[in-house]
Each structure stands twice: as structure tokens, then as C-alpha cells.
Length: 117
Length: 111
Image (tube, rainbow over all chains, first blue to last red; front, side, top):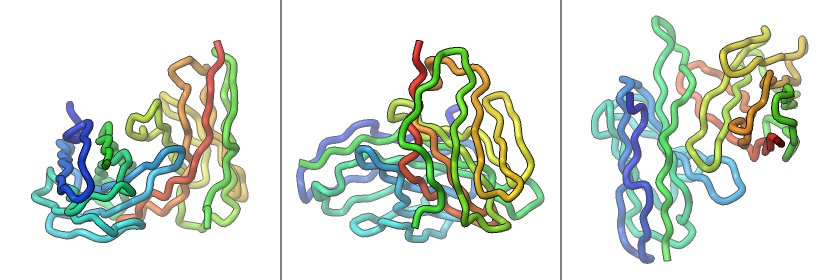
């Protein structure tokens, strides 16, 4: 029972390089999310996807793009990495309470630690 | 604007009950109180949530005051593995609400 799987776990990039962070969930959840966490701070939402084929901006979307490839996968892309994007990136997913419009709690992956030099 | 206020840090002796407070004086009628924790930079882990009644599960208990302006997360018999940052979050679970994390309470369990 894998839950939410993120790859890679660690990555070092040079300024200006591009990178795609991968996220997959096996819980048949409709909603998926990307957060970043900077040292000593809480998580901040970058983008989210309420369902396959839809994406919306969160609190800090600048410098990122996302793709909801299918129901299982939600990728985050840095087109031109900057040192300010050095952070730990977490992917999460959540489903609906059966027969209702209400969301279940979010499940998180173990994160991708990204350093940009 | 922060929706919740938590103490930045707390200590608790191993085996004792850990009581983590949270103030959420501006909570609205359709918002739930959620608790997550983050152990040593792992991904956050859901603990419990509630609307107005007290809740208990295998991990913890949640006590919400009658006016819903504050709550307390109780870990009944804290172990060293409960050392983590605990986040109290208020949000509606209607539709596709996103979690807004503050800086949480860093709980240290002391042997």
C-alpha cells in the first residue's frame, strides 16, 4: 500500500536548469496538491488539481507549472530553476467522503529535497 | 491573516498525556479543526479532525470548546516517537478547500 509516492527524493540543480518532480497516488483520489516547505516554516500551496484535467494556482505558483497527467499522477515542473526555489516539495492527495461533496483528510508523500545552486 | 494560534514549542515527559492547545477565535460555522503532525521533515501525517463534538481515534483525542474558539489535541500516553511539529488547521471540508499551514507547535517528548 504505497499511498503517495514522490520521485526523486533528492536533487541538486544549477540555476537555469529545468526539472520535473513526479507524484503518483494509488488511492483513487480525485484531488492532488503540491506544497513547498522552507526551513522553519509551514507548508505553502503551489498548485492543486481538483480532478483529472483541471489545475488551479495556490498561494505561491510563480516559477512553476503543473500537469495532471491522469487520475494517479500530478507533476510539478520548474522551467528555469532559481536559488529561491530551494525547498522541500510535498505532494498530497485527498478523496471525497462517499456519497457527499466533502473532502477526506489529505495524505502526503515523503517529499523531494531540491537544492538549486 | 493567521487563522490559528499555537505555542511555538512544548515539552512533555514520556508516558504522560501531551495537551497541545490551539486558538481559532475567527472560526466560521462550516469550518472544521484539523490536526496534522510532521515528524523529522517527513510528509505531514493526518491525526484527527472535528467540527464541534469531541473526537477520539487510535492516535489522539480532540477537545473543542463549546464556543469553538479553541481546541486541545491530547496524546494520552506520549512516546518518544510522538516528537514532532503539530499543526492545527481550520478549514471547511466542502468542495476542494486547501490546507493553510502555520508554523505549528514543536512537541518534544522527554525520556
